[in-house]
Each structure stands twice: as C-alpha cells, then as structure tokens.
Image 1 (tube, rainbow, N blue to C red):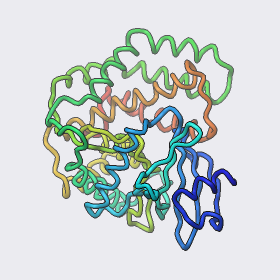
Image 2: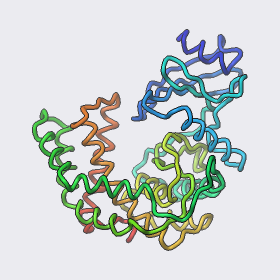
Image 3: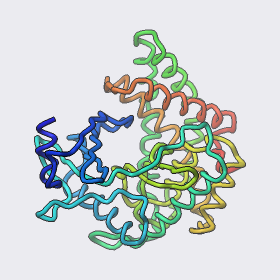
Length: 342
C-alpha cells in the first residue's frame, strides 16, 4: 500500500493520513483496478487503467469530455482531479492512473428498474447527450454521416458468416465440460439462428446517414448509480467516442429492461422529452440492439475460447453470457427483429 500512497501524494497533500481500500476490478471486466480513498472528509477513487488502453492522448480526450459535461451542469460525472502541474493523469510503471471523485449511490441490480428509476436514467442520458453534442476536440464533427460503428459491426458479422462462427463452434465443442461450455454452446447455436438476418439488416444501413456526436458507447446498467430514485452518478467513460446516440439508447435500455416492449417504449418516450430523435435515429436503435447482441455474445466466445482470456470475476462473466443468451433467444423468436421495433 506504500506505493499507492506515494502515487496519491501527487494529487493529495495529506496522503499519509488517507484511508485506502483496495477494490480490485470493482466488479468490472475491462482490466482496470480501483482503490477507494477517504481523505480530509472527501471520498475519491484511484483508477489504474489497463496497459492495453487507453493511450495518453485518448485519455486526455476522455478527461476533456468529462470536464465539458461538468461545465454544462452535468453533476453526475466524475471529473478527474488535476495535479499541481495541471495534468489529470499520471504515468507510472507502464500504467496510466487518474484520481476522481467517488460517485455516490448504487447500481440497480433488479431484473427491471421501477418506472421512476427508468425515467431518471433515460432523462440523465438525454441530458448528457445534449451537453456532449457541443464537445468537439480537434476537427469539427461532420454530421450526419453513416455510422462508423455500424460499418464495423457489418464487417464483424460478415466475418462470422464467412467461417469464424464455425471456428468458435469447433473450439467450444472440444473444450472441457462445465457451465461455461454449456452456455457457450447455447450462444453459438442461437447466434447461428439470427446471424443471416441481422447481417442483412446491417448491410441495408451501410449508407444511411445519422447525426454524430460524442457518446458513451458502453453505457450499461451497472454504470448508472442511484440514490433512491435519483441518478447520482454515471461512471466508466473508457469507451466514449463519436457515434449516433442510438447506440447508447440501445445499450442502456437493453441492459435495463431486456425485452419488455412496454418498458422500451416508456424509456424511449422519456428520452425524447429532452432530446427528440430523427426517424432514422429511432429506427437505428433497433439495429444497434440486434447487432450489439450478436457481436457482444461473439466477442465473449472469441475472448474465452479463441483467445483463452481469463477473467477474475467468473460469476460476472457467466451472468453476462446468460443475459445475452436470453436476449438472443428473444431475437431469434422474433425473426431477428429487436424489441425496439415492437
């Protein structure tokens, strides 16, 4: 802990008296490590980013967005603290480190949030999108344009069709028996049932222009913190980038309410009270949802069976895969059409 205390001294002048709690990955699967620190009546979080990402330039963009959101009166985001030299990150032992306020509240761990929490989450996302729309480090954002993210998804779906899914199936079949192989085999087969339709839908959108802006791109229910029914924090900005807001809507609603059509409709309506969508954006939510489900499941299979990656939180990995399996089964029963179209 002495090394952590020494790191903290770059930000905190009374680091010697700080109470430090190691949280490991704090339930995340990205490879980041966390420490919760109590000092001078404040609670802050020290984060060590994985060596693989982000680069220093990328982290500066992320921190810039957080500062921009805070200046636009979005008080639910953790703005990194600057050191005496003005920098908001430190490079040490091959890692990038940052110190941010510890956001209060807890994620909603229920199967589905109550109506007040759903409305609060969707309103918070809309307000964040409105504030982020004026963030443009470097060159201005050209909008609307075809989604780069959807284009990459189309390519990834094509690769699955061209043999990668069969490769994964073979490796899964040859793996050791157990809960992981069982859910993996189920994912392979349900992906196969929807792949052709989802890939065809993605190809049909290759030239559809959508408004672009900075978005979260990986906003999951675990990243939205509540105090009672109020959003008290939005965390984990590691994937932020330029994209259509439809991607964030699909990701958040899918994780919050799974495949309940009335709740999808309610969530979309609340969002649009603050940030109306174009007709194409509204339709794109369903495409982001269906392609995201297929490719998220394929990524887990690729990481675990082709890449032989190990994750510390095995129960968390299995829970995520079961969630994807349930949603993919619904997608298959709907002929490849997302619940967003219901």
